[in-house]
Image (cartoon, rainbow, N blue to C red; front, side, top):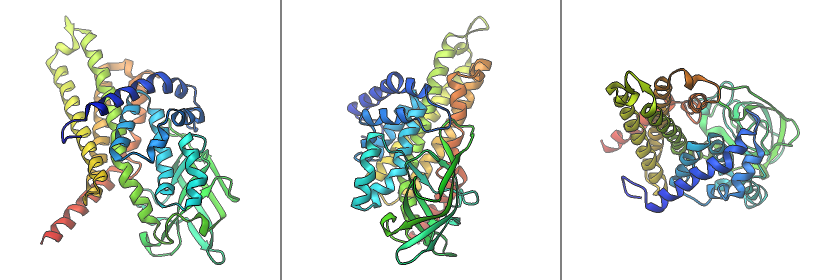
Amino acid sequence: MSAFSLAPEQTAWCADLRLLAAERLRPLAEKGEPGRVNRPLVAALGGLGLLPRLFTSGALDLCLMRESLAYACTEAETALALQGLGAHPVHAHGTPAQRERWLPGVGEGTAVAAFALSEPGAGSDAAALSLTADADGPSAWRLTGEKCWISNAPDADFYTVFARTTPGAGSRGVTAFLVPADRPGLTGASLDMLSPHPIGTLDFDAVPVTADDLLGEPDRGFRVAMGTLNLFRPSVGAFAVGMAQAALDATLAHTARRDAFGGTLSDLQTVAHQVAELALRTEAARLMVYAAATAYDEDAPDVPRRAAMAKLLATETAQYVVDRAVQLHGARALRRGHLLEHLYREVRAPRIYEGASEVQRGIIAKELYADLEARS
């Protein structure tokens, strides 16, 4: 990829993915139960060879997949992304036995993964985790506490769980564990949320884990979490860009044919200028997402800052674009089942999950001042 455009084969792949999402995945998504894991949809993503790419492609390819699927089927995009988010720590930090046990099923779409970081009192402040991992003999622990706002809970087959192993140590006292869903003492419940993807709570009642369940080293789990988020944050931006592009294209079509004041809406300068603004912001967000993903693939030193910028700009942009698209469509866009009604519900959550917009601003500022100090 150049600094300003995709290669022709990448553009063609994105077009194929959009068509695939519209023709093959959208019908499966429409049959799913809102708020619960759609296993036929996940299996279809595996059967089409998209899930295995989560572990063989770079960050840019992940962004292209998420943007393209989001354009035509947000449910398919989210199902793919949640598989990657939950399973990436296993791919990157798991033992050979863990990878052999779980990753083939993730790639086939027969094993559903989940990333269990947030808690009722530790959402944006991920270092404030209170789920405890109490020692239970040599190289064994018992997990006690609650996780909340966990995507794919309580329907996942396994969870990447972050728990506190050293009290009072902040981010330095967190450990990552791979916890199968059938582990004794682990229960959960679904939450009824604004966005239609599956999300729920998990309760840990002295759930047993051992050294065989560790992902990485004890007390080093925070870097497992942040490494995963640095990869997926730009692709959250790609999800947002896909939704923004869908809203923009719908608005172009609507304003070009909607009769108003003796012409069409597009003849009104105030409308045409708004559409131009939507296109400008969407393209700017897309370029920042691609740049952040490319930086990750090239192992650049400023990945945390670029990832935060990409997620922040893209998710805030998508909220703006979808909201203005609803305004330009009028009341029809508020009707249940309309594309923009769907996008309006979908677009709000990405500004919160995987680090709220305020957290991204904090990361950006911290990185900027650190760079300043290093140059001094």
